[in-house]
Image (cartoon, rainbow, N blue to C red; front, top):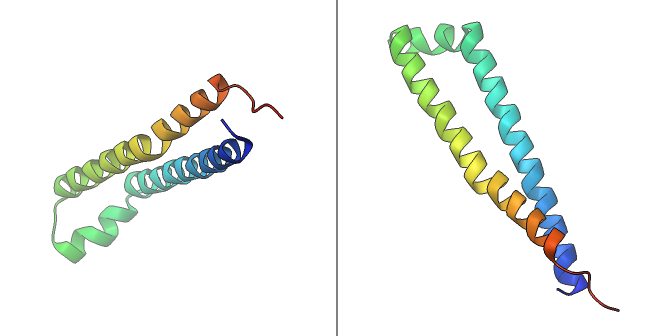
Length: 92
């Protein structure tokens, strides 16, 4: 692996890690709003939905976002890190 390729994958792994971190921060904010009742107070009367319907919608959204964050950010980040660890340093 050349040095420029290694630098590219190091940068890409940094970006993927930040995206993974920000995705989970968003998840925690979403769950905090859901558990505090802010989501029910805002969306319930606005869309004329019951609390159970809102819970199902938001839990499905949280689960979908978590799956997307893991599949598109965490797994590629981990794969790149493992590949870089196994790759031999470029000879100079």
